[in-house]
Amino acid sequence: MPSLLPKIESQLSSLQVPVTLQLPDGRQFGRPGSRVTLAFTEWSALAKLGARQLGAIGEAYVEGKVQIQGAMRDLIDVTVGLLPHNPAETTGSWWARLQRRAKSRGSHSLNRDAAQIEFHYDVSDDFYALWLDPRRVYSCAYFRDEGMTLAQAQEAKLDHICRKLMLQPGERYLDIGSGWGALLLWAAEHYGVDATGITLSKNQHAYVTRLIEEKGLQGRVRVELRDYRKLDEAQPFDKISSVGMFEHVGSANMGAYFRKLHALLKPGGLVLNHGITSGQLDYAQLGAGLGDFIEKYIFPGGELLHVTRILRETAAAGLEMVDTENLRPHYARTLWNWSDSLEARFDEAREVLVRSSGKERAERVLRAYRLYLAGSAMSFEQGWIALHQMLAARLDGKVKAGPLHGAQSVYPFVRDYIYK
Image 1 (spheres, rainbow, N blue to C red):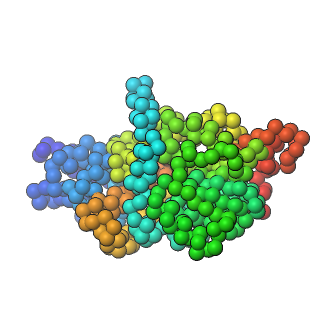
Image 2: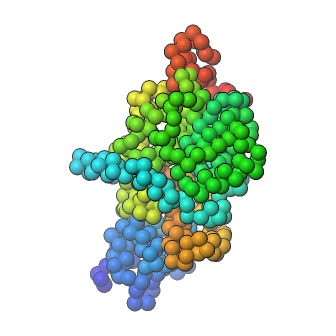
């Protein structure tokens, strides 16, 4: 182990942010003016730092084997400096790709998907409320104007989606993975649609049901505890949105997912998919152990695909892509807002989690989310992952009808309508 220390000390000396390292035997070394301190209680965790397995360091922090002192923004600067290479530039062999496909097929049964969603979203509603905006929008905001607050940017995102979908009063609208109901209720209250939301989270279902009753929208808005695969195709919808959901679908199920959307959408209607996409063409987890960390502690079963793969599956299902927009920097800013809010209410967050989960699990969840939010912000900033809104239409075959000759849907094939 002594031979490892010069290597680690050399790694730390090249960083722009000064770091102090505390060893399991109590010794310390580092540069003057350190803004980040890493205190190790086990030599095995220190060895992971020497190997630059940063995901393993994150796991050691969650499990209490490493203590971190310092601002999360400084810690992320340290993380970027310690990475041995771009973690998105991983190359996979045919055998690795085959293993990923097999894992994907086995990870997304109805029961397993429900359990995975509960693992993430049913931590504690009060915990999420501490660092999300008042509407609890848990997806990328849209900072249309530089000076927008997070709450304003989230409302701008909700309206951006509704405008892209050209929602009209009385239309039957479906929101897949409706979360805490922000988009569902915004669409109903501002655009007059008949809205249906579905979720696999029992906490979210109960919360949105209460909101619908409080707002007196029972006749026009409903939320169901249902998997998208179980939706009835006999009464298709005019418009469909899926926000922050298809990351959970899985590579092996992506074709079936889009075929289901096609079946649920009326001819001439529009569907918008808003979700995280991979920064690499050939899907693989982020390197340096970062993907393993997210899989274990945050999104079990989550898979990110490149936007080209998503659009290929969209087309294969018979849907025509009519507009695609990358909001990657918007999500970086959104995540930093969430991270800063969690840091500002850290002690309160701990108390909330202790009440809902007990002290031991509360500490693990809190540490995991600290790293997850800041680390995800880093990943979007660096371009390792992205956020795409993809609008598609189901053509109705009516070449001479529609807003433009040959449109075959309600889409006008100009973007002006979004901004009017």
